[in-house]
Image 1 (tube, helix red, strand yellow):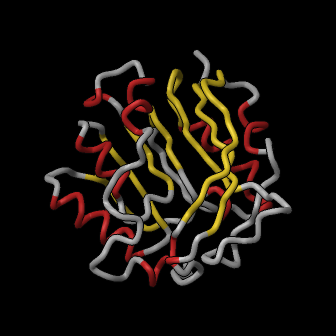
Image 2 (cartoon, helix red, strand yellow):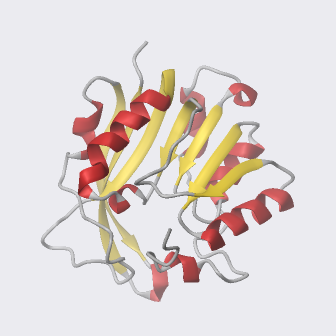
Length: 206
């Protein structure tokens, strides 16, 4: 695997956490959607980066697995877990080719789906369906193309913008808990810019 397909391999290779240490603000409500005690919830974090969200869920008592294409990100995920006294099964893998024999109650991925190669999109979502427990949930988001928004300054050459609504079509047989599209300001890399993102929270039907 070419570990330098993304600039984040180098960005994560420092003592500082590029995305900070604060978990995403919606994670607490995400855990509440699953009808299980945290200790019984199995989580898969696809594209876990430096681990801040994975560590948060592990601190709530969940059984967390996470992977990222960056060796430096996985190393920092393990270090952050150790510092917080939790265990995470973290390893290097690629969203395009990953395999697992486990099933999960939460499959979570933010800011990663755009790294899917077009020929792998359908098989990826088939795999997600197969590895989600009945009654389990997924949370995904993806950057969507808007002609009035230039590409972000930290955009990787292998990232692909999606079209509005395309993400949602892969969950037509699921119970849709929430879908939305948001535009927001980002100062990543020290340069102010804007993103538009589609978000979905869906439950696999019983």
